[in-house]
Image (cartoon, rainbow, N blue to C red; front, side):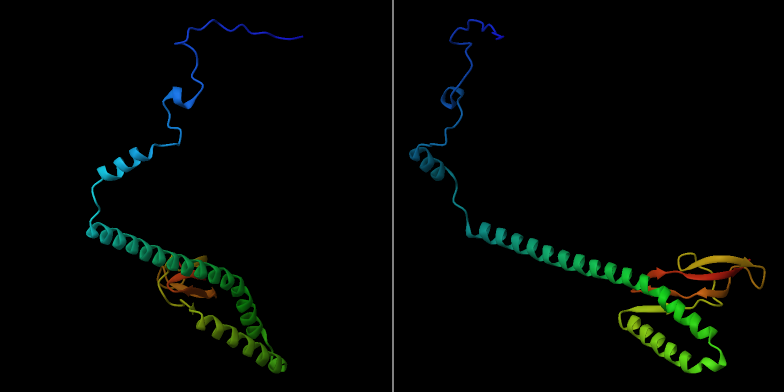
Length: 181
């Protein structure tokens, strides 16, 4: 089974355009004489124009270099912050082990104390600092209130359940505290 479509009879003016020449499009083969005329018609560039262009390009490159350096530093800080957040529970567990050591386990407690102090020293060398807000005024940007106790002036940190940590002014983990109500 074949389908035939009828084509209307078109006059030469109505026939579709089939070549670039007929459509008025450039063929890619330009006349060299026209090219020379175009070059002659353009005004000559002045050395000042080239100098200004070079200065703009140099300034753009310098801005690009600074921006990529800032972005790389920020990416490094984010990566370091993620690693430190994962290490903080280890520090907390070492502190709990030290607090629960009994008199007969002092040799073991001394080993845990050495590991704990070494880990804290590594964090400090990398710009991470602990903060213990006991007795400070409660600040929701730096503290996480776990409970409220009616004792003393309202809004003060009574007990610190877990210390807080910050790096370069950024809170890595807020201190978990008990607040007076």
